[in-house]
Length: 177
Ligand SMILES: O=P(O)(O)OC[C@@H](O)[C@H]1O[C@@H](OP(=O)(O)O)[C@@H](O)[C@@H](O)[C@@H]1O
Ligand SMILES: [Mg+2]
Ligand SMILES: [Zn+2]
Image (cartoon, rainbow, N blue to C red):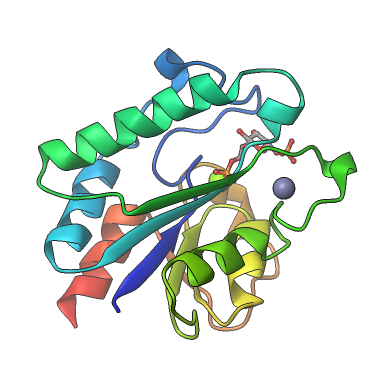
């Protein structure tokens, strides 16, 4: 199975230190929707693993979060692609859950739901915690310079992390081989 696991905020859509609280605040990063569709059309399974502590913090509801994800699915479908799976952690840091990145719970859920291992599966993030969560289950890490990646790029990254300007550039790389 050709599988990729994407972070959401700062990779697919613009991020904000004030959280993405409404559908109107959910704005795709140029090229990201097309990149997801290109992968899908090339036979890749596209999964999303995202921390959404704003739910647990009371900033927005799960219904509002779902409206963002429905918009994402619609936009990718308009370009011929499919978003196969979206898993999120709604918890606050204080909840001590196993699904808030850098804990690997979301990645474990994806592996179990797709009946596959994650060894060598590319994962794309803009924060260190995104990469750490995936690497814990054997993923190959890719950092993008969009969102928080602009600063994350200067931190100590997991061994083997490849850095690209944006998701579109990562997909160009993955599809060229
Ligand atoms: O990048 P992904 O995982 O898709 O989503 C991140 C968001 O849930 C929010 O995560 C928050 O971190 P805390 O949850 O407050 O530590 C902050 O970084 C916000 O700026 C950000 O929008
Ligand atoms: Mg992010
Ligand atoms: Zn959680």
